Length: 119
Image (cartoon, rainbow, N blue to C red):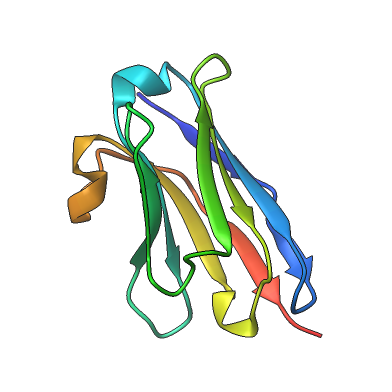
């Protein structure tokens, strides 16, 4: 059973930064694409960013220029660097993995980590 464990969430003021980490229980290279989703209260879960094995990345329009996804295959860890955070970024952030991350059907999910942007 593959486990994805997120960390790094918390409370931050608008304009601040956070870095989320997602540690996998096996090689993320074997998992293939990795991504971050988020779900705000009363809203549907949305794909925030993903990164392929080849290092290609893609971002939701709402986070382009502010968030950066990266992966460290040696550490089996994926990161989401979030800068210039806004109150509308408040959500539970989920790490996800698998070929179908891009289509919203990843094979694996983490348990989620809360990010709250508030003054």
